Length: 250
Image (tube, rainbow, N blue to C red):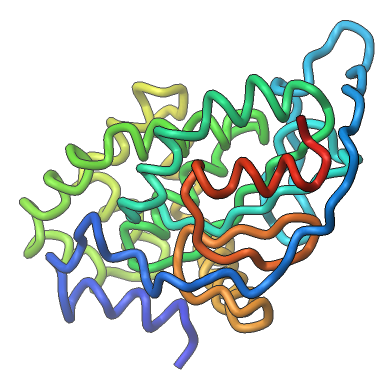
């Protein structure tokens, strides 16, 4: 059975299993960050700002900032993970305005999928231009308590949605859970969202990439961070920022 089908079955098996602490294993750092002297700020292209620039990586992550930045930060995160939401609340503004804005740090966000709800939101966050991905994920985490509460209130209906044909199930799931309205209020129209979720192959690809990359890179929980390719494990902003500084981001 593929990871996609296992995720699809999770709703029927445990529809109300979403909790803000269900983020997987918290692991100690198993990598080190090479020390570097302070790296000077790098100017963006004329008329642009690094924080407004985004592109999709070859791992289907979304890179904010200078794609050639000397310090490359990658985060594996789940959109239903409370620890990820906490990190976003603590770090997003500082990471963006100080480090990404300088051109010295790029920030790539990759999804580790934990459940069907997570999968639907990951697809909807990809339903517009790359520049929208980070703001939409931040909005999910900012409103995570409300998002989860609505999902838990509609468990039986969500179970039924996951029994529908593949090109209908995630559209129905998003409708019942309130996600169509949530994303519509943030720039993804209902018709646009339905079209994205009806594309079953694109939804399945997100789940499969999550499974493959997690195994290949030993990502056992979220949030897990990599700095210049080194897995530094699960961190808070208080412990991650000194690592970025050690790598040369000042």
